[in-house]
Every structure is written in C-alpha cells, then in structure tokens.
Image (tube, rainbow, N blue to C red; front, side):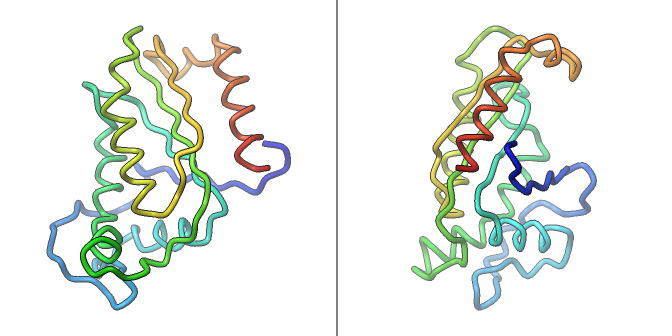
Length: 159
C-alpha cells in the first residue's frame, strides 16, 4: 500500500520439498537443496519488510506455509547452532491470518510459529491481523473492516 514495491509469493506455485533435516548447508547458512526455495531465501534476504499470510487449518498454519517455514531450518542452524550470521537483515514483519470460526484462540499456534519464523530470519514481529469467521476466499470482501485493517497494516509496515 501507499506506493511500496511489493511481491506476493504464492507457495502453491512453487516446486519445493519439505525439510529433511539433513544438517547440510552452504557456508553462508543456506540450504543446499536446489529447488524453488532458493529464490524465496534470496527474496526475503533482499526484502525491507515481510508479511506472512496463511489461513488457519486445525489450529495451525497451512501445510504450504509450514513447509516453507521448515525449510528455514538451515538459517536456524546457522544462527543458533553454528553462531553465524545467517544473512538475514533486521526487517519489520507482520502476520495476517484468516480462520473459519469465531474462535480467536485458534490463531494461537499459528502466531507462535510465525514469531519463531520471524526470529530466525531476523524480522521483528511488529503487527498481526487475525480475521475470524472467514471460511471462503470471497468472505473477506464482505468485511470492509478487515480490509481497512489490512491496508492500514501495510501503510504502517512501509513507513
């Protein structure tokens, strides 16, 4: 929003495998598996901010989001085991999530995973937006309050 250059990464369009916890990584803390995640690592390292967006399924992130996050095990290993700079600069982050019921407690596990992910990539968990009672994609269009909150979050993140 507000003129920021943004790029949306749609995980379903990427070809990548889950983390195998092989403990093999490049000297810069990167994963050695050669798939579409290499571009994701690069884009996040170059980003000035990050927004993670995922629906909640059974109290957790989508499988695609969790699989992507798990692939940052190499960055976690570099930072916390090898005590090396994993190449991610300090950036602000936001987490946006939708869920079909009106139970706000269903967001708790996803929030914890997002916070852990942001810590590994050196992003500060600055903002969150949880949208309950959103079952289908089109449901969000009937909620101008959520759309305004998302827009405002983008403005804050880009300033």
